[in-house]
Length: 308
Image 1 (cartoon, rainbow, N blue to C red):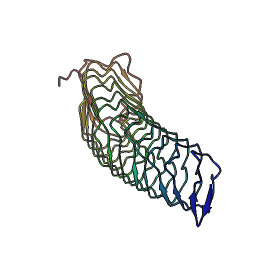
Image 2 (image 1 turned 180 degrees about the vertical axis):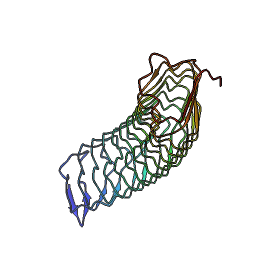
Image 3 (image 1 turned 90 degrees about the horizontal axis):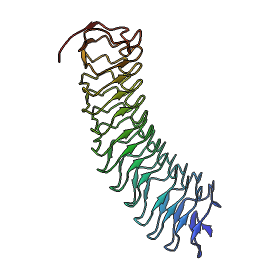
Image 4 (image 1 turned 30 degrees about the vertical axis):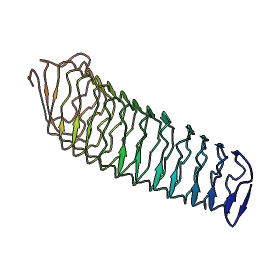
């Protein structure tokens, strides 16, 4: 291997290892057809690398392979790739377009975290899981297309996607991790699939524009801070399968005027509606023993024995 005028030239290798890690002279990589593997950290920290062409026949991209290649704007991963490692494109700040191969089952952790200019992503049909922080801090991501068959969105997967306005969650989904959509400022509405039983901590915290949330029968728990500072939330109905609402779940939801608490809710956390100043209508006749002292801090009204 050698570099000529900033371009990497390969001479018979089938594996690219990490000898070019941090190479600031490298501006272009054209990977020849006989290369099967790009190992971990192969091009990480190549801060002047602008163009990458990956070949048909490539099968493996290792952990952090292109991490912090700040100037790359576009990458197409060929269909032959079966494995992409953790953080493979993390910190590619100028990356706008990424085409993923169809034969991967998991989007790895931190795949595109801190790709500030990534415009959108289409998750391939075979993917069952989106890993932790996979697309976190993709500030310009406007859309994310998720396939039927997706089962899990892990912690902070879309954290800080500040201009993501809408996303359709497939009915196959059964788990949404903590903070998965936290600080998605422009997200306006969301429908939770029927297979999701628990909304984990801070999933939608800081979604300032979130106005409409659809929860379906089957949901059992709303975790701590789930809707914290969703200031424009005005339309939400709690399902009858709900048994637990944790601390500060609806704090600073100042657009929410009223909410009905079904009789199945046996646990209510501390300051659930802190600084929301809403009217709460409870189906039960009196406060259940499992509700925390101070659950009703800053409520305007609480009425017992109401029917929906």
